[in-house]
Image (cartoon, rainbow, N blue to C red; front, side):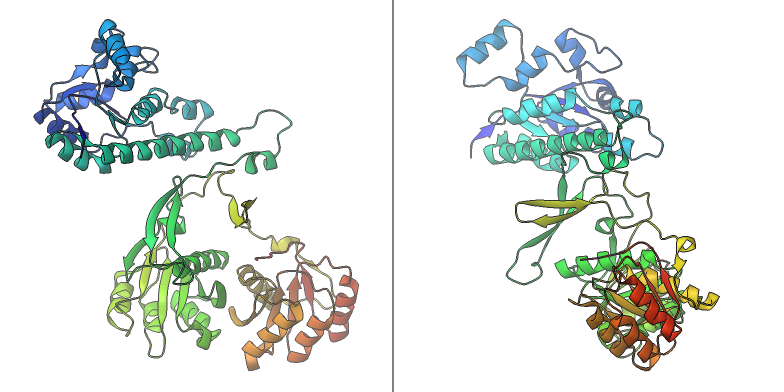
Length: 530
């Protein structure tokens, strides 16, 4: 395989992880080292012989380091085509020395703008200019030059240099990674500027929904297959995804997560975050089949599982508080089976129980979701693919305002019923439309999800609840178009209803509740989840 020898390398990195080890191997292989600023100082402190780029170009670094590698002797040395007589003659005439390897990573723009309170001026200073220019020059001329943008590439590059030069295949792969690197960097900068107001005419929607949208994703893992075995699948993460994102979750135990596992983990984590603390959500096929809050996380786990024990078998759970020994003991009881658990943390006792006690101990995935600040406005859009494009919307993650809810019936809910309605409304937000939930005692007792008619969802929820429907409260994610649903709920023994309101037939629905003596709250906000 053809090789391109490396006689001279330029190293200029912001993240200096692994830099000294790489430079040491390069120098031992006879490579001359050029470097700038902090990179040069780091290498010199390690005892390596380094030539300052400023000495090479004859121009000092200036303007606070903004100008240091933007020079014809640098870019000429990178861009010169080794088999072009005219290029070689120009290099000789102007004292341009050939640079065969460029090792560059960029200013930490993403980390800077993620910092709370960062100013626009601070962000702008972290926009790298010389770095992307060198990367693009080297990537364009990858037929002769290697370009390194990640520490993970260092070992293979050093190994091939030690063996005589960089292969065509490696140089091509490095160039592809380099263009991806600069594209992601520019996309982050573009996204940040979309969040900046440009004048008094700007509105929040201008910030959250920019006229163009760049999305850069890094592959985290390849998956065995997608929703079905004949579909290929992989997991990707946004470069700026915070530690609190599910995609950044740390798997503590269990076999590899599947495509469907990731979908359900995301739904379980989202559902748990909506619940009062401590809260537990039990998910099956992207829908809660149980959810509960209680005085302890162990009791909440028991109540959530009892919401629908048949459906809960093989479920994925989300916790909004640490999983403790009591919760783990509950899940490890005979007859139960758990696929995965997402939680902010697990106590050592809980991990011991879950990984040693139940029959499924070797396979259950325990995923710890870190704490962190949500992504800034403009970056947290929810994207859904459609044929040829994407739909984008802001997430439905704002808290509800119970003090703004209106009781529209003659009968008013008691404080206890109002608390139950508040829990039911929180749980209903995680259920697919048309969504109906029945709750009692701080736990779901019946769920109707994803039906084409709302009354079907009501009937399913009532059937799931069985005898527990008597005294339960009902929440609906959107308005009732007719009074049939509330009449069916009353006949089954439902004590109170909460819904957004807004139907043309609201008066009929309210009248039906008044005839039944059943209190009903209007929230004024719906929570469709398609």
